[in-house]
Structures are given as structure tokens and as C-alpha cells.
Length: 327
Image 1 (cartoon, helix red, strand yellow):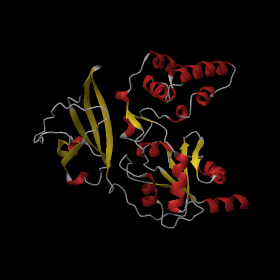
Image 2 (cartoon, rainbow, N blue to C red; image 1 turned 120 degrees about the horizontal axis):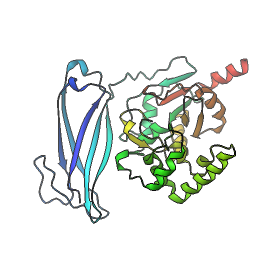
Image 3 (cartoon, one colour; image 1 turned 60 degrees about the vertical axis):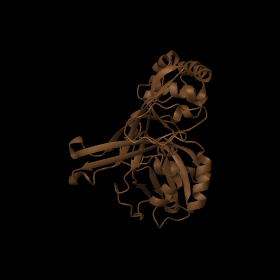
Image 4 (cartoon, rainbow, N blue to C red; image 1 turned 90 degrees about the horizontal axis):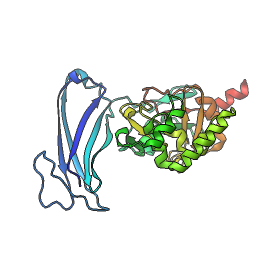
């Protein structure tokens, strides 16, 4: 049963004193409802097994004129109740309604060999290939490489969850203490997310073997054994707001995405994981021959790991190759 459904809209990019008013209306669109709900009261609803229901959310807001160009997106923080034989508890979801006027999309590149591309704040309502198409420069060549970060792609795929939905158990609380404090697995919720994906047995065995290897000076064994998501999970604060309170998983079907996008856009495509320490991991690419060029180009992390809002990077591979041969 769903006894409650609430939405807290948040305008990202402006302060509260720039908001004159904001009002939310919720319209349940239950397929089997006998009568239409005409007020803002949520009637407790029985959701039958393997069935779905729908909700229409209307947000009306008024802001000061000086704040109009500052809005980055509208974040809908959703809280709904779940009631049944298990008792009752709250569940949380959230998604972005982007502001496409947030940035200027000129679709023209400069002459840089490695060019970060700014976009609107991406969300699950976006299509990843359409995003590449919308923001890639018009003068892109078939030899160019267009990269997208693994976390932005995962967000578009809806592969993120509110940390309040994660119920950490004793195992995750104990194991997480063995990781560096800045690791995404150093919190109970981050570790529990991995356990939910890879299974407790695999994670515990990986942790034990990893500890033994670490004692003998061999690091990173846990990440090799615990599954690909062990390296890709981003805990809260690890992603651009408003996803800074979400646990973001690694993207799915990256190879298929790269091949399909490259074919449709007539440009090389790669999904990458880059950090400020110079580490570049290529999750997938349509052309493996570009691997060295991608790693060399992204070592300085031109897209950044803060709030630059540049999930795409264009690499002029032909010019980079020519420069490399020259030197």
C-alpha cells in the first residue's frame, strides 16, 4: 500500500530569498481508480502485485527577475510511504527537470586538441545519444573522439539511488572501516550498495583475500575480486549536485552504447572514468585503437571532478597523433 506521497521541489542554482513562491500539485493517475481525485490530499492506495500506478506532478513557481538566468535545474525530491506485512517505512526518489537555457549551446568547437563541453545538468529524462548529438560541435570529424564520464551516463540511465533507501547491515558497517576514508566504500551505505549488487559472500571473500594481499604489499586485490561495480560506485558528495546526496552506480551496457552512438553520430565514442590523480580508465569504446590517445589526452582530467558541468570531452585524435609524431 502507498499511504503517502510527497514532493519537495528544489530550484538548484538560486537562493531561497530569490524565490517568491513555489507550489506543488499532485494528481494520482491510478489505472483502477473509481473517481478522480480533485484536491491535494493523497488517498491511501493499494498497489496490487506486478502492477504500476502513475502520478502527474505540477510545479508552479515565481522568482525574482534577477534569478531567472541562474536556475540550473529543478530537482524533485520525492518521499513516499510503503505499508504492508513488513510494517511501514519511507522510500525516497528524485529526478531532475533540466533547464536547457542554463548554458549556451553553440555547437561549435574551438581549436583545442582536448575540449571539455559544458551541458545542462543531465538526468534520467535525457537520452544519452541525443545528448551527444545536441552538444557535439558541428565540425566534428569521423576521426574525433567524444568521451562521456561514467557517472553522468549512469545518471542518465537512472542508475542512482537516494542514500536514505539503503539499509546498511552489520557486515557492511564492519567491512567499510577497512577502506581509505575518501573511498566510496568507506561508508556503510556505500559498502551495502556493493553487497546488494555482488552478494555478501563475494564481498566478504574479496575483503579477506584483499586483506591478506595487502599485508604482503599487494594493493587493489579487493577491487579485482569484488566485481566491476566496486571501482565504479560513487558515494554521496562524489557527483555533481543535485546528485551529491545520491549513490551512483556504474553505467550498464557501455560497449553497446559506444557502438550505437558512434554509428549514429559518425564519430568515435568512449565511456571513461577519470580522476584528479591522473588515473584514466576506459570502460568501453567503439575503437580500441584509440585507447592510448584517450588516456594521454585525459590524464590532466580536463572535465574536472567538481561542479564544472562538463561531462563530455572532445578529442581531436588526428591532430594529437600528428603532434606526437612531430615530437
